[in-house]
Length: 139
Image (tube, rainbow, N blue to C red; front, side, top):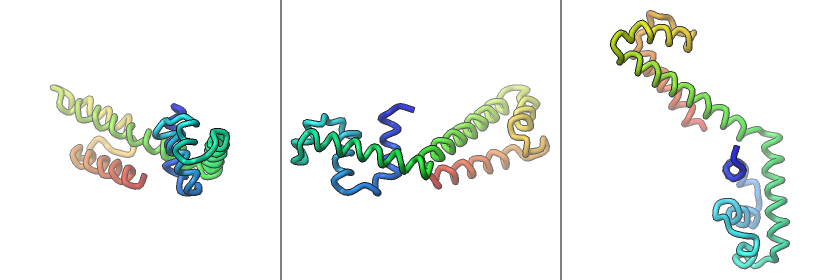
């Protein structure tokens, strides 16, 4: 995962556990991409003080992730939702192709073994979309 994306996710999940000063400085560093000198001028600290604060904040966020694994779980669920969407796209596209019904049943039974070939496809699609929406809302 990209370093900036990882730091942004860590901040999104655990940023409220930092002090107000840490949050402010870390946001300038990660989200605004300001240099240490620019941040130091903005908040009235030394460059070294900003460096130490950023380093400690980053270490704290990474420690929270090591203990709670919330970002890891988020990324995993997001990947699963994307897999569901790809399955749905494949299923829908095979249903729309001439002679696609047989192919769709093979996709349905091979990639979604919990369904039977006799399951109403529209009902199946609606259920999967609802599950997908619920997972996204829970994130």
